[in-house]
Length: 322
Image 1: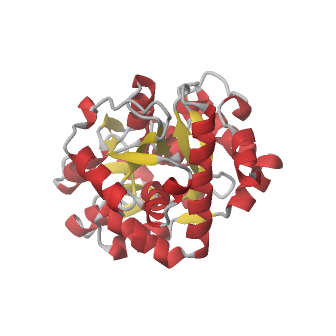
Image 2: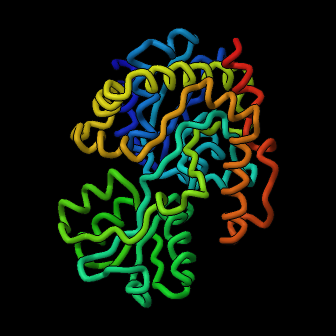
């Protein structure tokens, strides 16, 4: 994983707020790719490097780690990234035209609303401090859980904070609850053994929560097609080698393999042929429309756009056929 390690080492020296502007090479061979430090965000990038899939397409990855999807969308818009990874909670941003969904990754169920010892239900959070990274899947599961409990965000003291701050604030007893995800929850459990899971995306079987890879709106179409091809081949290797995919992701993430294994258990992986079929028959559009309706209800979208305006399903299908 030499190229990924070199890129990761370089990325670690750069603040997320001052990302270096490394322009793509004239022939488009270098792609700047963002990811989140979890199984969903890292596994395909690790596999692609180990299996030589970037080289196969004549591409060189320059990867940077981010704490959430909205930061990557911001970097895409600023021209600091070419591609990135987002969870379902950030899908409203491509829907507003700030990025293009180039590939659906997985269906994820890693998000939870958690409470400190003594907090047993969502109602117990009334009037209490709840930390959440705004615009993320943690925010999404919190909103879903509040609605299910007959509550709104006005019933709690909702405190926006980045994911790392959620972990530290919850552990220190500075907040009573949080909307957050695995594997960060595993870290919290170690520090607060009596932590309680109050709600989960698994409790909403009528909803789907796709994670995805996104591209900047100005990225060259041919480069995008090549990147999609890399992601598709890595995806099929992951589907065929689930245990090995955890090992590869662990090497990139530098986490305990047991944590990455637990994280992967919250993920539904699909083959590329299945994702192509679901693109053609409208299933992916149904998933995105469901999220769109949810984001309209939260006020993050004024109206639900047609998924065809921000999901490049035609490119995804074409890349698989070639």
